[in-house]
Image (cartoon, rainbow over all chains, first blue to last red; front, side, top):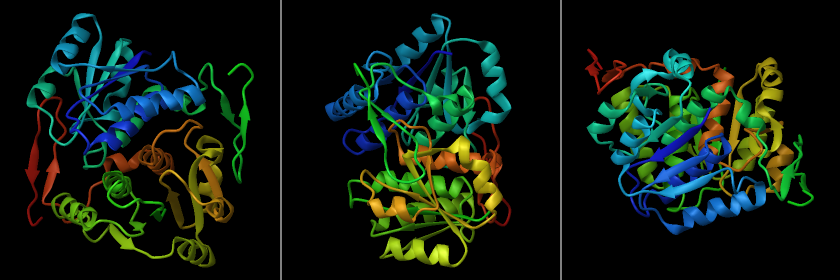
Length: 179
Length: 179
């Protein structure tokens, strides 16, 4: 299943670290791209540093866009579906199997505090990761976890320099040949 | 299952919003308390505002502590277990049933960038939410989701002023009587 993430409503500086976490989760949990509007260069640098070390430089990309609504409309015109994560939507566990059956490219939208009403209208599905306020990072993680059925937690990326050997104590990292 | 969260390594100002998200996830995903070291007052204010509106003022608390290591040792002495979330640990899906079988009070530790080596030694379990770098907010959410088997996504809190009626479009919020 091909999944991209769209981050909207990023407020410059104030949201930089939240957006960095959102991008890292997008990568680690199996999406292939995050679209963002204007963001600090440090976010791209962090992701490139992570991908250089842990792999996936060619598997995950950040793309800066100017107009999220245009992207959403193009995505749908090209046959993909758009999912907006919001606490006001339908509970993920009531809708995830319907989304799977669509078997289409997915664009998942995560907002910051305020999301324009238009997004609720344009989205094919407004999906709630529970109905309590929490975090768009957590919402994205749970959504991708449900969609990929936890398999993303075993994901390896190509071209990694390093790989973790899971340990009950301490840290063990092996250098990869040719990585 | 009684679960508390311990947030360590918070860097003043820089991590405020990340820590706020961690606290909101702790509340929304079924833990009853988050312990923090020195944090900005705005974090407590945000959580109190959320609990006043959405419920749980008496079900979820923030406690400021001075010495995380002391808390960890006391937790274990009192018969609880301590779980440290780290990408270097044992994959959650390989260890969650063992943790459940312990049937003890759980303290789950989430760090910021650097976590002292002592934490790895003291923890009863070092648990990885996958072995790629991502976000302590996502890690906490997935851990609690695994532990509570998704039931936290239907959670209602006592004393809520408002409750969401899930909708496929738009927002519907009802005022609770006596809330």
